Image (tube, rainbow, N blue to C red; front, top):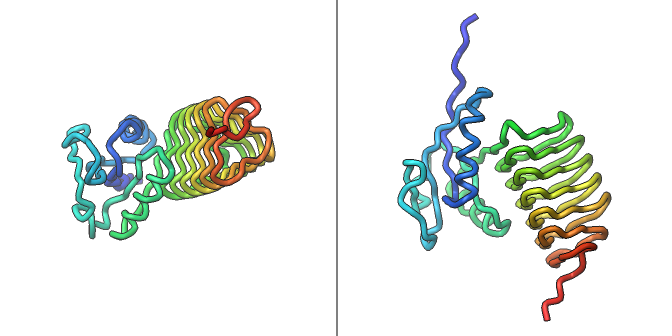
Length: 219
């Protein structure tokens, strides 16, 4: 039988910071499992301070440089949920199509699903019947247990632990080492502080910190 070489994907990253560099570390590992990705370059907002190149590829500030090229796939390498959502909206304006980046070291149950544009970095674990929406960021060492629902643009920082039947709504941000007990809902655009232990629902837009997590006193 003649084996044909898999088609190489051409990848543009929106963002050129630490997350972009972490994604570039994953690309050679993806090659070892048969997914060949050519890093074309980065796109950043015009007012973002950045070098001219990343890993010898250009960093552009002009979104039109990438318009009309159907061979390109985009991943938004921005950790903050609202910034990621704005970038996706800009890219959609030029008809961009999105790829997901999932480190081969990630464990994902066969009954779980990850939607387009999501980034899942090394040694995260996703068990049974979990659903991750579009453009979700899952950092290293995160565990997502059975029947979790993670909505679009949510960010799970390194070492987050979600027990079963947890819901994380759109654009929520969970800080490093946060833990959530079974059945809890994190509302849209809520912020869970680093190391917080969440034992009850968090309302949309709220910031909670501590163990047990409580609403942050802003006074």
